[in-house]
Image 1 (cartoon, rainbow, N blue to C red):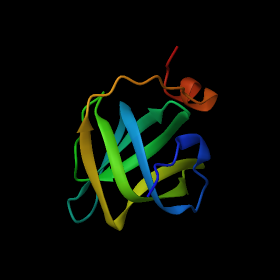
Image 2: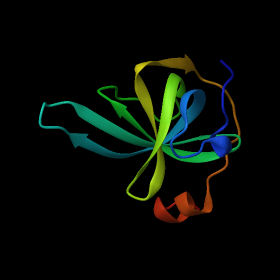
Image 3: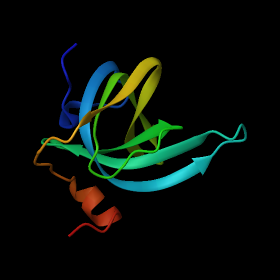
Length: 111
């Protein structure tokens, strides 16, 4: 399946493959079953989005590939998730330019 750029992700899209760089850990949530949900600000050369990843702590600068992702709205913002049948893989360090959406620049204090 072809990799979908962040700018082309729409709410309720599913079964997409995405590749992005981790920019910032935004929050960590602990569920009642003691699972950790890490929420990151991520970007590619087309834009930025939030991504929630269950039980996998990633490092800033990691380049991540998610197979079989979907996009939903959470806290009135688009957020990407891995589907139950999908997987997440660190694919290394790739030198990429990225563009933050204006909303993310303001929300997360990037100058």
